[in-house]
Length: 174
Image 1: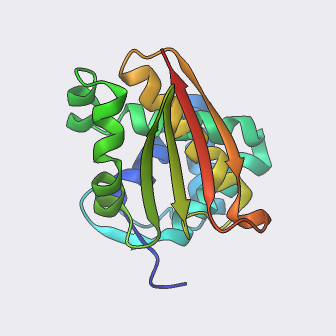
Image 2 (image 1 turned 30 degrees about the horizontal axis):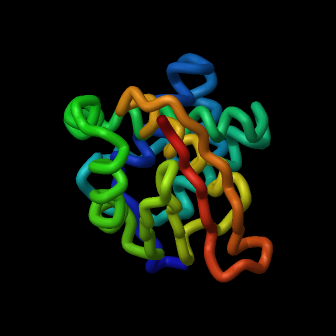
């Protein structure tokens, strides 16, 4: 789908994880196999979401799904000034801003958060296209927990790719 756009900062976050984890050779292999080796990705510009999916596939196919989760976590924790600022916020504040932060980075889908007694429920509709994308989101939510110095867990309870009306993540913290 050509109308699914994503900010370059998200793509660059995953690429930085690739380079940090597997070095220059891994980075070059990823860029070559995903056919983005000749593209200068700029943080503030929008790009086709398929570029990110190709990187996620490369990570999963060459190193396993657990590494996709780590890439999602790394990306959230290293989004420049935003990652620095949220270190001084709590999870409630982060999740209250989640809908707007998502809309700023992605041109598709919908994210909503609902506070619960022990944390929050995050629903995502029309966001993930492949199972590995869902795994990356689990890592992103774990990254938010770590950024806010919150001990907790992320549990995916529904999946749109498996027939549910939306994806749902139960995030609990102390």
